[in-house]
Image (cartoon, rainbow, N blue to C red; front, side, top):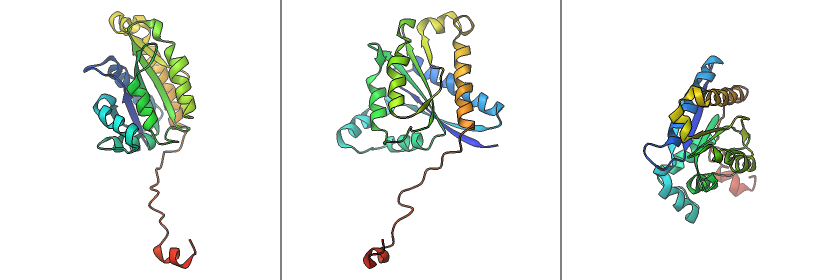
Length: 205
């Protein structure tokens, strides 16, 4: 059995938030699908609201401070990433976009990703396709075909009636297939291969 690392990123601003609820449901579905395929999963959940100040500082200074450094490293080293944003003004939230902006280049390249979003009405569901998916395509992530949008009515009407559970299970299965089909991510430290000082002096570097 291979242990896979999943990072779940919730862009919800309230406590509790529907974005976090959807993110947790997607993570559970992915863990279950991985177990069915013979792999275990370790899940790390990130609430962006807890890192809002550090994300803003990073945008202004170019440096990650506090726990944000660990979050960025976790995303880079994840075997799969689940990203959920609330929809504001027909697009992803500013905090969600700012977090993606401070990821190091290549952090999401070829990485299996599920995208999800929450909003007041189903009319916002297309934001996943015309806003979020192109953003992740630009980052060269491998985004699963099924994007999951949850409107307020999805929670109120019940999962079976709204089809939300089926969409979550489908997205989790698609992410699990991609993760299982990829080798485990191994992150190398750029300082592990430092040229000895003697070689620098000798000109052999």
